[in-house]
Amino acid sequence: MITSYTVAPDIDILTSNFPIPGYGLVPINAFVFKGSEPILVETGAAIESAEFMEALRTVIDPADLRWIWLSHTDFDHIGSVHQLLRENPRLRVITTFLGMGIMGLTAPLPIDRVYFVNPGETLTLGNRKLTAIKPPTFDNPCTTAFYDHTSGTLFSADSFGALLQSVPQSAADLSEKDLRDGQVLWTTIDSPWIHKVDANTFAGELASLRKLAPSLVLSNHLPPAPGRLLDRFLATLTAAPGAHPFVGPNQTAFEQMLKQMTASPA
Ligand SMILES: [Fe+2]
Ligand SMILES: [Fe+2]
Image 1: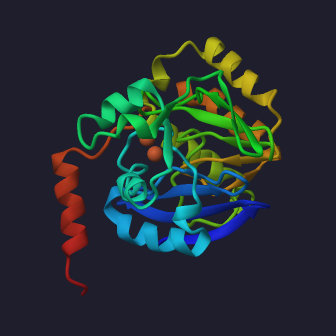
Image 2: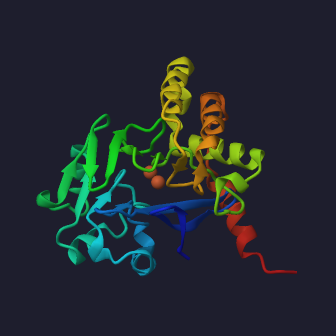
């Protein structure tokens, strides 16, 4: 089920939870940044595109959108991109050369409907000024996050996501332990290369994010978080290279799980 609520003046979230059996729930978020040129950040999961469009219509008329910020081309974010392009001829997709290339392998984006941005570049979209950034962790090489100077919001793409047992409307309502453990687990799943990085170099990269001092942090896979939580997120990620690497169930464990799931109640 996709629900929506307002997270800041002029910013709404569309969110659903995807269960990973045995591990918890992963939130899948998209955001509407309202303003003189409204931006939809991500377009929902492919499997729930129809429901996403329905939920989106309760937040904004898709005909009023001007931009889609597609952080990367994974199936949890590209769900309604083509539907939206069909419905709204002036809508353009902010992506990268690589993002467009990857989309070309499954559902090509029309070349006159894309707008390329690279990390470090700043775009003025109506009354908003966004600077593209490379987030500290990612599962897809085209991933591009951003900092919105207008609202002081850091959109971190898949970074800072968490696997959770229940999903509140604000990350501030999670216990410190649930948040930390959930973020470490997510990070080791989503960015398994984290165990290969030089911890000092990585810590330096995280420190550069701290300087942004955002008032709000929006992740694709975490409830919205007040900016004061960023320090905690960065501390969690600093420790992630040394965390236990994620190993999924093998066939024997999987069959065990299936047996439990299909066992008839006594
Ligand atoms: Fe991803
Ligand atoms: Fe994702």
